[in-house]
Image 1: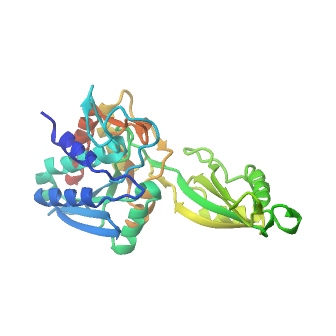
Image 2: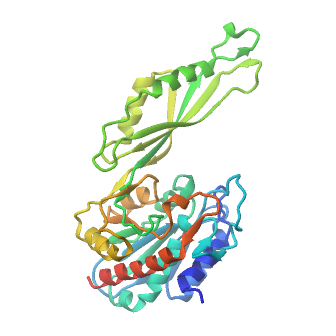
Image 3: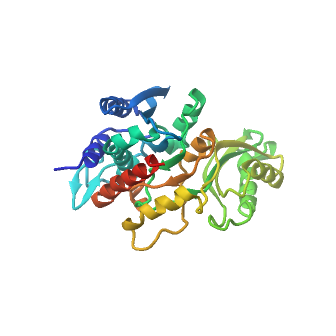
Length: 372
């Protein structure tokens, strides 16, 4: 007999929500109907063709702000390697449930939904809960960005992001600043290159230089900011001097760095020959380890781990980068049953033990919050 959380996980895994293109419509519609049947107040928010976000709430009669949970339903593509398990089959084998999005992060969504249902009486008597379910996270938090533009988000007193942490409470993550750097030249026939200005050569000079750019100082917890050139594009045909070349830069930052300042310093460093535009701008997220709610969640998670949790961050970004400012920066923890090493991997899985732990842990967090 499968637990409610595992059953819901398997149902969610059956929906192909690969992004791009996303196509979260069927999955979100299923969840909307399912949540309404369980007594949630539900609203769907479209943000593109077959693209949807969802806000659901269980109101409470008590005092204080509701507890918030957030998760995304889109997944990355399958990759080129052959899968041993059907990526949409939700196979259960050897203590694991397999499928694209199992760790990242449909199991977490199922776990916190089922935890809310199990704590309905406490929630009704307490402050209530709010679920913020998004699409488009994997391509730069497109869904969360659209949601902020469409609606004033409901108040929450604290937020749990169900990204994969193997049930380890994580304080935050680095920011992501993705930039496109473009060089402009002058086209000419490839047999007469002296009549043109080769934009690829200009980009090559900039690429050599950018390797030595100092993003900023280290952070006590997040350590050194990083810079990586991940993509380059230039030239239309071999027998022409290219007049345009671009390369995309992935910069990961800590809270002690301002993205606007980084952009200005990089422009000054590379010079006017390089045009810089921002593709993705997601600030870092970091909660204070001394906040009482953070300490309480760490205490509640203690049975899941051999040693007491210590301050920790994750390298990936989350929707919290955009949601927290819109929510007036409540305390936030990243906490989910998925295996961090399994995110985006072939034959992605979530451990059934971790899934069960997460439902229990989320339930305890909800019960504690509702007691005020």
